[in-house]
Image (cartoon, rainbow, N blue to C red; front, side):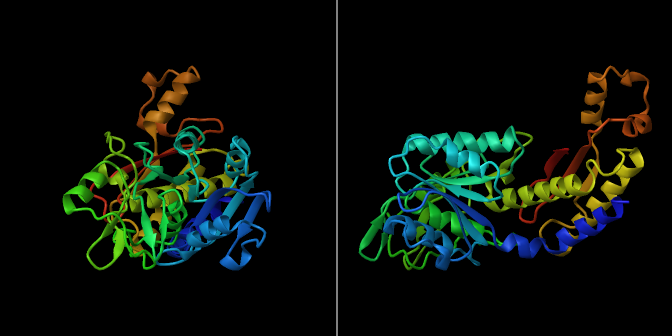
Length: 355
């Protein structure tokens, strides 16, 4: 009796996508002797007074946000002299968040470690999280390479590592209907001046940089570190907005199916068709909300993945027609393939979801 709820849940998630996409979650690793372990904060008023001044300021910068402020900031505090970050990363492996940042004194070694961790979370554990890291050539859609140094705020000068929390807050506070490109950082009074050619070169190298237009400082273009494109990940995956949309869709589908389908109903072909209908309804709501392009989305059983699975189970698929292949018993596995076109993308994105 659980399947009708899936339709309702998907439609609700589609309707609420704009609201949910307005405010993301920033995860922060800090090193501080004032408070150990996890800290959940929904506003600057929740920042513990026992934290060091630098750590409080670092978290406060995340809360500045962009168009909106982040939904919350989750920090994990290690000892000041900590050199092993496993405890923090293990904690965040089980937490829901959008953008992770390292301590304000992040070393290149730590930044690369976290970049590798993010790639692993996305590719090996199917956890669609991202990080804003200082000067890391990660070449990956899950890592934002923030590469502006000597950021002046009045009489103070910050490194790019110290300002990663600010960038993560902007990205977490940017609605899915907008891009963070040209977001103005009102508090920043100056940054190293880039010519248009220099800014273009940085962007093409997968760097998110700040740009002084002669009057104000703003994000030159909201891109991640991806530079090497493939047929599966084209130029659209370089855009932070597009990756955020794709990640939300992936998470919505996987979470809703896991919560309402897996272990609750039989994995029959008829039930799979009900799931497909529910997801189509979800896409229609995203189209209405202006998140994906109209009439450019589809969801169906992934015949390639399903056939591969059946072969691995000793089934002779050569004797099956398309309907028999599509309706075959796949035990507890569900193979779906979906195509969507996020608005402002220059190409279609193929999204595979295996549950």
